Length: 210
Length: 212
Image (cartoon, rainbow over all chains, first blue to last red; front, side, top):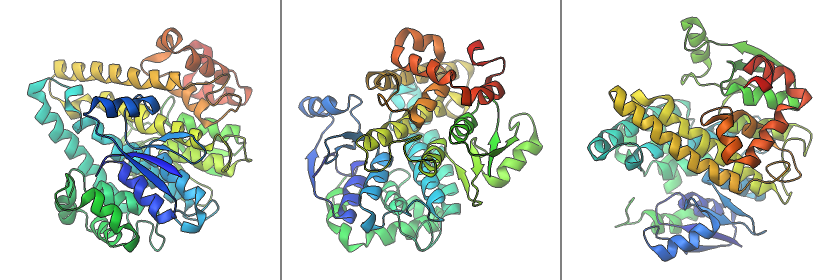
C-alpha cells in the first residue's frame, strides 16, 4: 500500500494517476499547506513541505514526482508505463521525463513564489517573466513530441505528466493555441477510462485547476 | 561509443565522470558555447536549448539532462556499480535524492545564472542572485540532513556522490560546505580522490582537484 500526501490539482495528481494505471493500492492523505496541523504532519516526512510526498510499500519516504514516476514504472512493468531498459526508446523516455521535472516543472520556482526573488513592486513582473520562460520550454517539448503519444506509438509516464502540467500556467487555453501536439496528447490522456476518477477529484468542476 | 559535448566545469563533468567509472569509452567534443558562435551552432544542431550536458548515446539517441543521463549510464553499467538495482532496499532513496539534486538544487541555478531574465537593472539582478543563493543553501541543508557516511546512501557508492562532488564546487562552494555541511564535504573529498576520475578532474578543473 502506498501512502500519498496530496492536494487536489497539485503534483500529487501525477502519483495518483500513475498508481491507478499501475493497478497499485494507495491511500490518500489530504494536506492543506496553509493549515499548521497539516504542515506538522507533512514536515515530519519532508521538511521542505513539498507535495507529492509518498511512503512506498516498503516504508521508504519518497518525494519528487519524477523519481516516484520512475519508481512506479519499474515496480509495475506489466502496466507498461515506460520503455524498459534495453528498449530503443529508453534513452528518450529518461531524457524527456527528467526534462519535464528538472527543467519545465522546476521553472515554477520563479513564478509560484515571486516573493522569494523580489520586493512587492517587482512581483508581477517576475511572474510574467517566469511564465514567458516556461512557454519557451513548452515549445521545445512540443517540437519534440510524437503522436499519438509523446514517444510515438508507445504510451508512457511522460503523457500523464503532459496531461497534468498543461493544466497549470500557462494553462490549457494557451496550449490549445500554441502547442497542438501537446494539446492532442493531453486530451487523449484526459479520456483514459482508468483515470476518470482521478481527473474528477483533481480537476473537476469548481476545482482550482479545472 | 558515447559522444559528450563538454566544457570544463560545466554540467558535462557529471557525464564524463560517470562514464569513466563505468569504464565506457567516450569522445569529448569541446564546445565553447559562450565564446564561439561556430561551437554554439554545432551544439544547437543537436540540442536547440544549447545546454550542457548533451550527449549522443552509442545507439545514436541524443540525450540531455544530467539526471537522465546518470540514470541511463547507471542502468547500463554492471548492476550495483553506480546505483542500487531495481528491487534493492535503497532503490527508492537513490531515485528520490538523485532527482532532488537535479530538479531542486541544480534547477535553482536557473535563477542566478540568468538574472537578466528575471529583472532589469544591476541592483535588482544582484538582489535576485543573493536571494537565490540563500534559497539554495536551504535546499542543500536538507540534503546534508539526509546524508549518510561514507557515501550519501551509507555504505553504497552511487551517482549521487559524483553529483555531490561536482555540485559542491559551484556556489556556495567548498569553503561554505566545509563549515556548514561536513557530511557532504567529506563525500566530495572522497570522490575527488578516486583514481579513475583523475583525468576528468584535470580536464575540468585543471591543476588537480585539490587546487579548488
